[in-house]
Length: 180
Image (cartoon, rainbow, N blue to C red; front, top):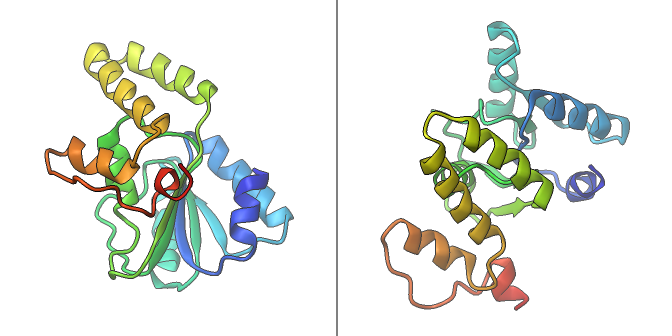
């Protein structure tokens, strides 16, 4: 949680922080409020519809509101001034990840994405994939996401090539390109 706090401490922009569970969304929100980060709120599927709409509308209208959310947030949302997306843990697939990071920078201005990753996250995601109806398919998707997380070459190139488009030169602005 300290890393998230440090990211937000001097950031006065609109963004989304994706977490894995409802409990994480609420706990991280409380932690940040206790640490004087006040332009944040949480959002998940367990919130009553009226409250969800209010939280979503506040975020949409605010120039600097940050939502901490499960993947229940974002579908159909189009806000142009999102400056950052943080994944507190990896998405279960590159498709999910790409869709979620695509919510930043829609106005064409610079935006950042941050992905926190550890082996414990993968163990939990692997368990979910194994218990799903399409376990082999979901395990393969998770394996590709793990490869993305552990890559030592241009991450943008990985994403572009994954979606069958060609990118031959490194981007020069992802974490790997900036610090090989």
